Amino acid sequence: MTGPSNAFLTDDTVTADDTVLSDGTVLSDGTMLADDTVLADNARTSNRMPASMRGIVTTPSPEIAWFQQRFAAVVENVSTVVLGQVPSITQCVTAMLAGGHALIEGDPGTGKTQMARGMAHSIAASFKRIQFTPDLLPSDVLGVTFYDQRRAAFTFREGPVFASIVLADEINRASAKTQSALLEVMEERKVTVDGVSYDVPQPFMVIATQNPGEQLGTYPLPEAQLDRFLLRISITHPDHATSVAAIRQLDIIDRARIIRPVCDTDEILRMRQIASMVHIDETIREYIVRLVEATRHDERIASGASMRAILALARCSRITAAAEGRDYVIPDDVKDLTHAILAHRIRLTAQASYEGIRADELVTRILENVPIPNVSGHHTGHLRLRQRKARS
Image (cartoon, rainbow, N blue to C red; front, side, top):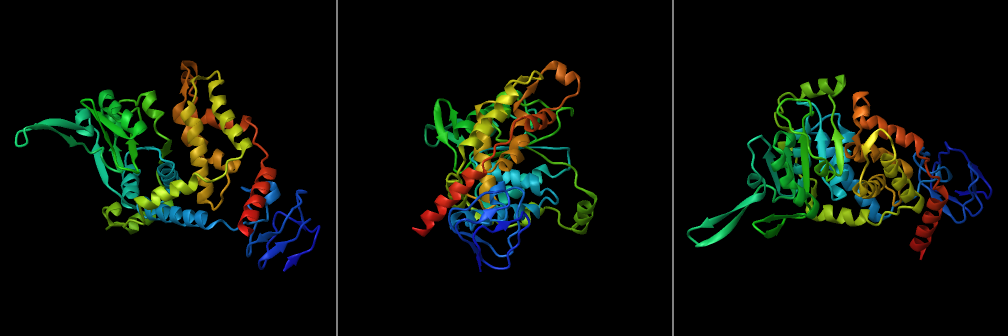
């Protein structure tokens, strides 16, 4: 069915079959299409899309469609381990595909360790767990050089950090000296012991769990180390229905152990390559920078977010876009990640802390005050260019 020229589409337009809109078709917000655009079957508009593209569902490229399927498979697999925490699981998978590290925070018994182990078991990659305690030493994490009498030479024995996915369980129970042992490997993906550097496997990710700071026997993470975590993910207690569902599975003692991998390391590296091709419009880049700069100009914030926060927002927003079947970033992709990326990177003033202001509250106000860019025209142009390339 071919739509007539100069036809108007409302925000709730639903098509019964593949509909081709001819040149000159006008959308409800006044945008005119310059070339043929195909509507998918029963495609209903989404408020997450730019206004000029509402009612239009473009077919994703094979690479993006494959990325979306693989992403959903990992999230679904981990969701069988930790019930009712899909948003937090989605953020953890996003951090992995963006090449960063995740800090999972929550009260004891909320499933922090299970989520980390579920992530590791969902990927066919090497996995090591480190239980952080006050008496843990840096050599227990990184490894140690010892004299091998049989070989009459010094030999390096790798520590548990030499794995693709490293679970640093209850990281804030170790001393600052041991916590700092992870600084180099989290940033440079290598470990230096006795002047010799050793590369860690790729992909590499640290998933750390943390108990609330007010608990006894915990040591706050230094700001330099917090900045190295791409996302801080908060896990809360499940709702009533989820808790009842968990009781129905009472005989499953360790859910993370029974799941099977749904992805391997080669696929993870391929997904990272696909995400690098997702388009970020210039106005989106400006929006990201303005959000981070706002944390540096707020009088209630003693120390704002660093350049790492800008790069983190850009990288993670591309992952979010690809996970939703798009090869371009929209403002909602950035907004959905802002709390998890910025809140742990800002330090409040003493007065703000005394008044009980939380970092999450300030991030919310920043999101409300920074103007959201209108990128609909740029995205429409990007789609037209992609369509022309596909036809050629």
